[in-house]
Image 1 (cartoon, rainbow, N blue to C red):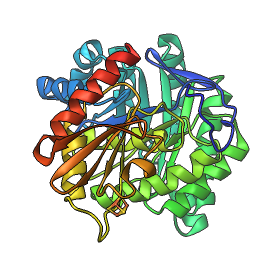
Image 2: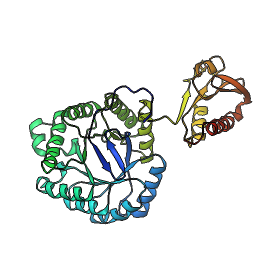
Image 3: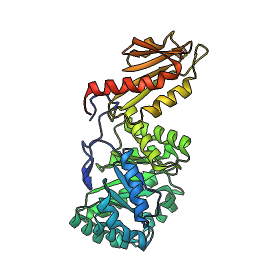
Image 4: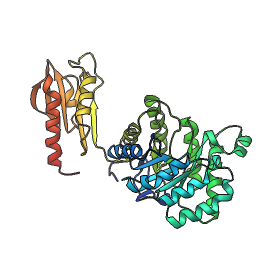
Length: 364
Ligand code: SF4
């Protein structure tokens, strides 16, 4: 865990295993995503899982809507480097197949599984025997009909009550290895639903704003909602849902955790907003530096400042930076100017210096 200050202590939860990864308790908050490939296309799915793993994804979920998908789970679970969660709606038989296939966990949506109540005992036993955990995933769009009738719509109370009811069914069978999510596309409803849940039990919670939208809107909705909950110590694993490539979800997830000191920062670009004093295009310079240093794995703050008036001073806490002016860039380390280079050598010089500093810091 990072040693930097956080806004609140983590809520105390039970801990579960999702494959080799622990979720809840004192385990670091994990970042998840979901593949967009057809799960039955094993090669494409494994390829995307490998890309997600490289981008920092720690748990991956795959959809399982058909027999062909359920049959593919075994190879996918075996070959994936990170735990695989099978996402099951409608068909209890796929839950059993996913457990047998060696998935790290199975997501069930009781609101979508007819006759779910009858199957709980069997699912609990199969999961328990195999050491597989579950996620009870309640969604606003598939809320239990009885609750929908009582509350009129997917209110925070309805979402929380649905989840607590479903949790109690498993607990009655002595099964406790599950986490819960109560997703809604409105961050305010979602936050209230999770707060209600957090008050009522020690279940690990999977945070998500569902159908959050395209990258810009979805990032802000998720960051806002997760920020509120995580700042209160609520949340044990997160999935940012974006209408964008899943590796983008992972990047946003990491950034949210890093912003709250819930995960050690890696590369942090401190760039000025630019103003009338700027003598360089700060936006494109910041983009180029970000791109050039994207593989940096050690914690490094790099400042990109538009002018030499305030540049080094404003970014004194940065490990490295540049302040531009008159077609040149003053390169500074810890606020001290170490050299001045022509503008077209700024990015290259920063990358060289970053690598030198990273080497001095040693392996991460
Ligand atoms: Fe403006 Fe210079 Fe500050 Fe950037 S560093 S905001 S250009 S004064």
